[in-house]
Image 1 (spheres, protein in one colour):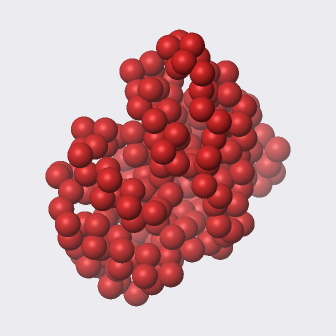
Image 2: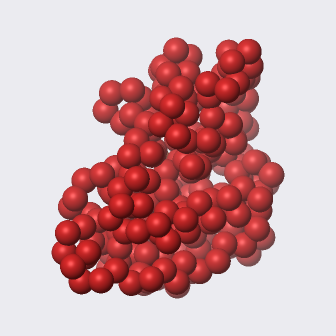
Length: 251
Ligand SMILES: [Fe+2]
């Protein structure tokens, strides 16, 4: 299992507050069956290149701290892949450091959409990022169901889309998530874990719900898509088998 969205690095963003919390988040992830965690601390480039450089320095320090702490006990922890969750800001595509925010050794970059209503210029910015040769993945698409009137514009950009584990754990959004899968607009899963209390590691729980309620073709697809992203390969279109009406009713 590959957790594609996490904030476990200590003191980089609003995620883990300190090293012990960070290590416990990782330990719990591994114990639940997660083999790899992609680290996606928040990067807000409101001040352009300066913000990105500052973020990269903070991330490097936190990453070294974690690596030093786990090196003697590697089997108890998942493999860590460095990345970031890049908030979409004006002119993001023009910052020369942008490729440094990609998921390690890939051209894939996790993008967080703006907090307010999406504007045409947001879609244009994503288009320009794509034109640089980068491959945007839209973070936690399930957070944006209230903006679904804009989904057709977002999906027409032909990107990859990640959903958060908690949305599969609660019943309320499962039908909407199924619709995203059925329209080939959902590819990978992330815990978006921030701490041990309010936003704990929960990837494996969601993954098992997908296996049980949606079926193994869905969980296998997530595995394949995640693995291919880490190998910087193209991700196949989901084209998943439709659920029968009874299974849909008891989602
Ligand atoms: Fe996040």
